[in-house]
Image: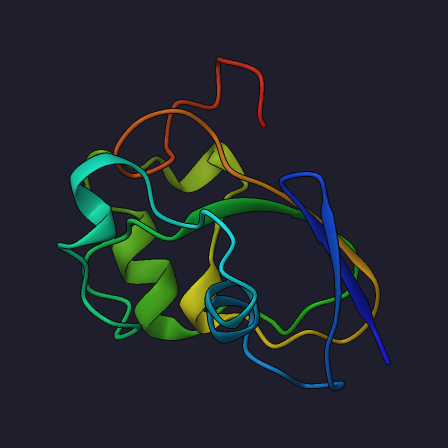
Amino acid sequence: MPVVEFAGHAVECPLGANLRVVLLRARLPLYTGAARALHCRGNSMCGTCAVRIEGPVSEPTDAEIRRLSLFPHRPESGLRLACQVSILGDLKVAKHEGLFGQRTEKPAR
């Protein structure tokens, strides 16, 4: 079973599991600020679940590519939407600062 490292925790999950679901079920802080209450519930519309990922995951979906090309995100940031990611192996995941996790110029947590 793959292991996801995030916010100082390690969580085992089934191969192919959705990253957003894994993090939320483990009660880990995927969302920041108001996004804890105001997010799209995994429909790739709001962009607040953006994270930096190291490790094997699914290719970006068309919906994810569209959302990450809209403000406040930048397509070149290298971020992914946790709601659109299938886990294909061990991962290291980091959330950046900002409501959308988009402030990649600051160190990731």
